[in-house]
Structures are given as structure tokens and as C-alpha cells.
Length: 126
Ligand SMILES: [Zn+2]
Image (cartoon, rainbow, N blue to C red; front, side, top):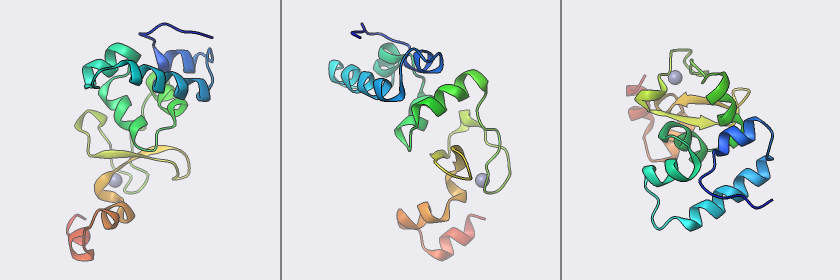
């Protein structure tokens, strides 16, 4: 079905008016129509805020993020069990633990190693 932008992508997905595949297709189509993509452009085009976009741009299962919008975001990091405040950032979306969740970046050793932290630096973060 042809849709006109702007569209509220996460709402359509949450209400099952579109499938996950359609959501990604619409996202691509909508991004192509943008000249540059600032956060304001993204918001205007898809009604997706910067927290939602950060989560989607990471491991991004859009349907999961759409559920968080309407049912609440994860409140605790599954690795350290401490609170996560989405407004403060410093988290990323991970597709396990055992479900999709957000974890503190500083808690994810494999990610820290991947971006070049040494064992000592990782130990210092704890
Ligand atoms: Zn944590």
C-alpha cells in the first residue's frame, strides 16, 4: 500500500497496520526522501524521537521499540541490574539477555573490547 509521509511508523507497527518488513521498507523510502537526515528530519518524517531512533539504529528491532513506546521502556540493565534512565543515554539496544533490551554501554565487555578498550580499562569501569 502506498503511504504518504510523514507517517507515525512505530504507531502503525504497534497497531499491526504494517508488518516489520513494511516498516523497514517505509523507513528506507522515507530516508531517501530526506535531503540530509538530522534528528529533526527523522522526527518530522517518522514521528520517531531520538531515544527511539538510537535504539532502532543499534540492533533495532522496530517492533520491540514500538512496544516500549506504548508499554514502557526497560528500566533495568540486565547485566548489572541497576536502573537505566533512557534520557541519560549511555545505553545500547541488545538482542539478548534473554530478550531484546537496553544495557549500559559500560556493562557490555564484549562491546568495549570491540571498540578497543583494554582489560584494565574495562576493569576500571566497574
Ligand atoms: Zn548495567
